[in-house]
Length: 396
Image (tube, rainbow, N blue to C red; front, side, top):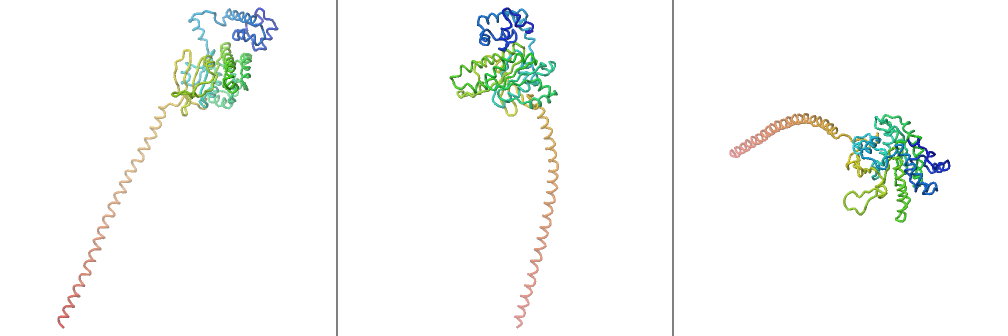
């Protein structure tokens, strides 16, 4: 471990130099190696040549202790070393397939997409999953959550923990939240994170979002160079923490629309090439109705592919099985079609028979009865009357 080789054990490092290094956020020799002589010189006002010699001595000590690799190693040795890398399961079959088992340690995973696509929900879910046992896919550690958009909600952590059968209070106790108010404060949090990582067994660092504050503070082309330099420092600090302490790092990123793109998706992540080159894995999230689509955009060894997931009470979840839905709809439709058919046909037949027979019989008989007396009655008296009158006239 890095604690076995202390700063005082290095030649030329006394109590005064150790105090300066500690004040600058450098607490072990691994921090010396990853910071570099230029940054150490700026932080401690040390001569750059002295800082360079100090970094070289620290690197030699770490190589002898087997904590970092030598200048030249075989690919087989590097492959065996990567077997010790930890992974945090996403608790979804789809996303675990995308990440080939889960979020890796010693790497920076960037999640970008438009608002409402599930970036923060994914981070909340990973805050719970990392606290599970290694047999369950976790790392049995805590979380350092850097919140720059004021979107962290402990209520969401409680619901996800309850859905996973975990104690919500214990889960909340293992999450340390740092609210960043500006880009300089955001960088300072990472510089002071080494002490928290060792004291609280931090296994996951989340920056939500990584570029938001830099984007809002540095406006216009005149400040672009300064913004990219500070942003470069922040993302490299995030990567160094992941590599130094063998922890996982997740950074969310905002997007912008490219107006000059005529075809395809105009959505692009902000931060430029600085963030794109520093991120180990880059995943694009987008909305598709109630479901979400995750695409592996950039990775050293993962294939480019798309998977579908959803958001639920347990955080990110697998979408519902479509075959189950089809079976349910088929079962419901069968009784609906059979039930109305039988009574409707019989009812129509029963109603039609009496309606046709009843009116036909009485109508014909009534007409016949009325017509006979009307014809015979007037004819008989008229003829007899005329005959009687004619006979009487002749006699006269």
